Structures are given as C-alpha cells and as structure tokens.
Amino acid sequence: MAAKIYDAIVVGSGATGGWSAKVLTEAGMEVLMLESGTSFDETKDYREHTLPHDLPLRGRPDPRNELLERRKVQQYCYACTEVNADFFIDDVDNPYTTAPGKPFNWIQANKVGGRSLLWARQSYRMSDYDFKAASRDGYGEDWPLEYKDLAPYYDRMERYIGVSGNKEGLDVLPDGDFLPPMAYSCGEQDLKATLEGKFGVPMTIGRTAVLTESRGDRLACHYCGPCHYGCRTRSYFNSPQTTLRDCAATGKFTLVPEAMVEKVTTNAENLADGVTYFDKPTGERREAKAKIVILCASTLASTRILLNSASGGIANSSDVLGRYVMDHIYATGVGGKYPKRDGAKAENAQRPNGIYVPRFQNLDDPKTHTKKFLRGYGYQGGEGLTSWDHALRKKGFGAAFKDAIPDETQSRMSLGGFGEILPRADNRVTLDENVTDKWGVPVLRMQCSLGSNELAMVDELLQRGAEFLEELGCKDIQIRDNPAPMGSGIHEVGSARMGEDKRTSYLNEFQQSHEIKNLFVMDGASYVSIGCVNPTLTMMSLALRSSEYLVEQAKRGELS
Image (cartoon, rainbow, N blue to C red):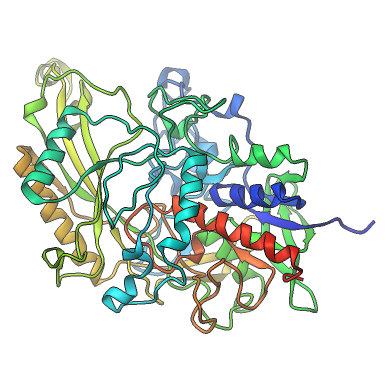
C-alpha cells in the first residue's frame, strides 16, 4: 500500500508548530505533525503543586536521580528539577559538540508542546529599531519586512494567547492589545519613580502571556508560582492547551510523538516530498510524505535537519545555513538589598512576572547615543521579598547561625541585563561527522561566542544598573559580571535567516526557502537580528503570517 501523502508535514509541536498547524488545518489541509518529545497528558504531566516532601530526593540535584544525571546541560535551566526533568531532553542520547573555548548551553524540551510548556512567557513586540537596525547603524542586514507588516499579526496573537501589560507609548517597545496588567510591588513603584524621575529611563510591568482575566476554560492566574511545572488552570499560553486543541478539533490533524526527524527528502522536480524520521522507542527509520514541509523544530534543531538533508545543507547555495546564530547576553546584572522595605508584608503572592526596563540606548534622541557599542539592552527583574531565603546567602549552621538570620522579611531588588548579540557569520553551527546521537544521526557542532560589542555592552549595563540601584537606596550591591555561554538565554535564533537576496539569505520574508518553494522554516532560524526583547511572540506572529501566505500559495498551485 502506498504511503499516505499529507497536504503538509509540520515538524515540531511547540509555539510556532502549533500555530502553523492551526492555520493549515482550519483552512482544510490535512497535516501530519511529527514531534520528537513524548506525549503530553495535562492530568498526569503537570506538577505545579508538587512539594519537596512529595519527592523521593526532596527536589535536590542528587546524583542518585538518573533523570537529572542524564541532563547535565539541561540543569543549567532553573526549570529543570527532580519535579519535571522528563520535560527536558536526555543529553546522553542527544549530544552536541562545541569548538575549543566556545562553550554553548543548548536547552531542549522532550514533550509534546516543546518549550512552550517551559518558557518564561515574556511577550514583547520588536520595533523598526530592530527590523531596520542596519539602516540605522550600518551593521549587518535589515529584515525584509518592517513593523507595520507584522503589527496586525502581533494584534491577533496577543488577543489569542492573552498578554497582560501596560501601554507605555514607546516607539522602541510598541504597545499591544493587552489584558489588565499585573500589579507592581511597593518597592517596584519606588524603582519606577527613581528610573523615570532621576534618569528619564522608562519602566513597565512585564508583558506576559498569562491570563489576568478568564477566557472560556482558561482561567485567570491565581499566582501559585511554579509555572515551569505546568498549569492545570490553563492560565499561561502553551500549545497543547490551545493551538493543538484547535488543530485536533478540525479532524484534519495527526500528531505522532517520539518521532525524531532526520532529514527532508526531495523529488526529481526539486520539491520537498517528505521527511525521514526515527521512531525513538524502537529505533526504526520511517518515511512520511507530504506536498509541503514546514520545520518548526526550534532554531538549531531545524538547522540540524537541513544540514543533514544534503551534503553542505539542502538548498544552501548561499552558504548561509548554520551561520549568524544569535542569543541574548544573559546572566549579567546587579542586585542589592533595599532596606526601606525590610519587614514589609509580601505582596502579590508568587506573581509569575517581573518588571521590564526597555532599551534606552542608541535611539533617536542624541542623548541616548553611545560610541561604546551598537544596538542596546534592557533589564528584567524586580523586587523579591523573602522571609528566609536570605539565609542562603550566609554560611554556617547550628543555633548561632539561626540567631544571625533576621526574622523579618527582607527586600532585594534585581536588574538582569538582556542585551543584543550581533549577527556574525562566524557564529555558526555545523555538523560533527565524528559524533552521532543514539540513532546514528550526526550532531551539531557549536562555534559561537560573544564579541567585543557584547562585552562593551555588558560593562555599561552593569555600571548603569549599579547606578540605578544606588540612587534607589539599595545597599550591599552585588554585580554578576560573567556572561553565560551563548545558548544560556534560551533565545537562540538565526542560522537560516530571511532576506530579499537569495545570495545572502536562506529564506524569503514568508520563511519560504529561496530554492525549494514548498519548504518553509517557521521558527527562530529565520531571524536576521535579535534585538533585545524575548523572541517567542515575534516567532509566533511570523509563523501566523507565513502560514496564511502558504495557504494562499497552495490554493493557487504555486507550491507544486
């Protein structure tokens, strides 16, 4: 019996894969979704109310926990614990390599829904300071689209996923269609007044994909805290509880978990005709056929598939594939004790959100210009009121140690920097033909590092952050001045960038291959530059735009 030919194959079930499949199935197309992670059951997999005493090892990173021992890289992410280690990929079965002196942390999910189950949900729009950055400072390339092209899709995305926030009227951080914002703490109100009154630097509450008003069977957040363990009230956006349910309701959707895609296959007409994949439990290699192939496996996973699909990478005459990898400067910032608030009653319970200080460097106002670096950075953070966590910053034991710990709440203010990493051709990934994964597929070799522009940016964000907290009245200010390896921000993008010129880009503005017209890459791989805001909202909005373009092209017979 001949294999079934689907209208489209979508590889990956996360934020963008869910959107692409939703658009296609609701347009009447039959979609096969292949997901390398295990199946998802919210009644069993969500563990947001799990407490340490419920766990055999009390939630500690104990070497007796085999799941965690096989996830040494994944444990860099704060969300990977004894509670939900199975949500993360097994590093032993799924290795990668790095170039000497260039460490890289690649955090990957292992569940239907991908990292949409685990993300921090910060949802900001990019602006023309980002899309047209090259026209402003002469570095790199502009995106082949501008803000006005994506704005209607941002609107629709925010309405569907539910983004809470304040409108601020800033060109660098366009406003959206927001649910009511979460509240600042009193200390954060002080910080906002200091930043805006003393420095002319704006601050807003985080814009987050967490409901502050109920919508159907998605309930308003009740601030229970550990969102990365799941959300049975469906308060935060993830694909299994939203877009994938919409797909299933069409009757046009087939989801296959534990299906690790190896490569894209093509026919004699230079069209994609399907993929090969491994059934992970059995190790059996299988084929799936479709008229259109869409990769949404995540930036580097999609790039690995493309590199494995042909010598030198499929449809890669530009030699762009694998290059211009970006992330955000991560793990640098400042924190300090805020004595004014010591003894205060904790507010907002475990609010799943912080504050955001948008980029304030190199904007139109000449006063914002700096010769130290190109582009800019923002801060995320806020106030933390603790009744005992401050003991963790001290050393000791016994009665004397306990007596030395204040018995009142303490306030600490933090500003963590998120800075733009410039696109560089030498920040790239290639295949390591000498190392394969459990299924015999060559793995990625990461060759990525921060450059001089990023290091200059780190110096300033630390200096300014300390200045801000000192003016606020913070004491015991601590500086985190050692940037984490690339990948650590879990915002990796680039490696199959879009552009108007097929000689210098891999995809067009609709995330369609320049060389294979029915091959699309609808995840962060298409990014031209990263800006300094969290990327997922833009990724999903691009996927929505591209998927609707795909449907129209398919109807016209332009993809066959």
